[in-house]
Length: 419
Ligand code: NAD
Image: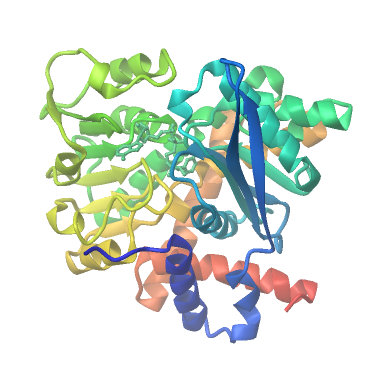
């Protein structure tokens, strides 16, 4: 029987190891083991048939030591408090690793969003925003998109919050469409960051990006965009999958065409894609495809004791949050696979969210070139911080990233006199 993983406990184990390697006393980091606030709400929604359904919603504010809580909102049938807590602590670590002035939070609703009409999705979002109203705000807690939420959902969320506030408050969420206070470059930011981190790790290990074989699991906002940028950087994206299964082409997939197809309508999957020059594969086959770079960009626990033994890659760049559990991680390490950890690799989204928020608070508008350059600067600096810390401590990049993050959060707490 396979072991039951509690994602929150898994992160705390790594966090404690990092704290010990840093030589911290338990008093210096004990607060990080407990979210500062956990809220569970009921989310009533009038369905199109006139009936009322009540969904469960969550918002966890993990650490506010370095700034307002920041983190996405997920709509998925598997969302529960443990998952949201894990994603919230990950956000505290992520914001610290890339050194932006935020703490960490996360929210979600337990719902299969693919089964809702657009109107139901809007009413769900407004209901959830109303329930969260007392604890969120541009200076307290700033949500953003995550799995099954996007710019449109953020616009509804902001509108509901603004209606309750009595004035337009764009800074309450990030990831909005550009026409309502969103930042240029935000939609592509996480995928662009994945490309940048892939480029940096390839440079460090002497892998030529041009012609490198890449497999991407997950074809959503992050996976689809990362695949697009990696192809532009010269990689050959040979495999791409989503919840319906995957596509494989030895000569490289037509990523632009596939992504354009998927984005044309919400809920579209790869199973409906009818191009030529590829064969259909399962998600398991995608993970064991022989490649240079594997990008898990779907959900948690893709790389586990069951799947890791079959993985044939030199590098894993974690685009999803928590795609590798502790067993998977250990097996990859034994196989000599280099892992660029999630809290560094997928931080592009929260970095440009930070830029969006600055623009909102100051009523400014930056151009896209400036945003992309600022994103690259922050990400490359974070990569070097993590690489150097890991080298010095003789650890994995995951441990290096946790060490950088825990050190920054613990220092902030100490200076504030909280610890
Ligand atoms: P999304 O909803 O746009 O896409 C998710 C993708 O994963 C879809 O293609 C879906 O079909 C696929 N998927 C779902 N279940 C699957 C399964 N069992 N097997 C294979 N594929 C499956 O979500 P997203 O925003 O792209 O987020 C993906 C991951 O990246 C999540 O872990 C999220 O937390 C993380 N992330 C997102 C952002 C962001 O800016 N959106 C930022 C940082 C991290």
